[in-house]
View 1 (cartoon, one colour):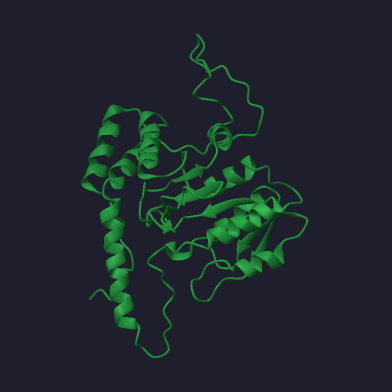
View 2 (cartoon, helix red, strand yellow):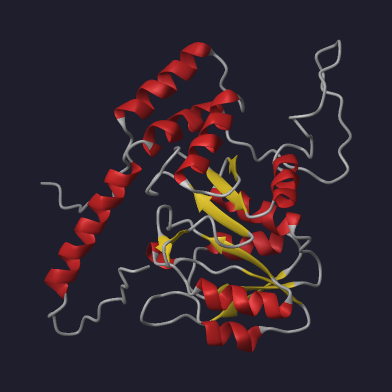
Length: 285
């Protein structure tokens, strides 16, 4: 008898499966038209200038690079998060500084952020814990007062809204993960949303060796002509993953409704249990 309890399942739509098979049969499986189309579909969904990548972790690394975060800088992150949030800060040679969280919702405390700011602080990475949005009005207000970059870690928060604004359309950068157990999956992958066009162009170059794919000519020998002026990375999403994402995006709203319905069942059945305090939930968010 199987005594294991499944706490999650990976949702892959039939359309996602057929898209992947079509791409495999086509033979063009690296970064190409399907990755471009996935970005277009994400933009239609409401995300600002999404740049697809091969993981959610690298999106934050790209954002920190584009913002010029480096040696000697400090980046404020919540004490409760996955290790990747802190590691990307170390990738850049900067120092992660841990702020406390709110016990009622698991998100980073605004008051704790204020207490952690020093002359070395360069950025804040708020994490939307369990998909519940942080207090972005206050966080962006603090960032503006101290000239800090805000990079939202929205690994849990695809489809979430803050005061009727879709997460992915609010701050300078927003990082999404499309890892296997996320609401929207590409098997593994991510997307970085950029509020302004300059960041968008920088990030697109950095994710593929700092080469401007849109404007670099292909020479007579089949090689691109380019001039890389920054250290770039191989962080792009391939067309197989993008094909899955395009198909899964078509059912994401139904998936989110299902998850919210399950959450209500838990709330209703646990609210009167002694010793359990439910997390705060504001449906207007």
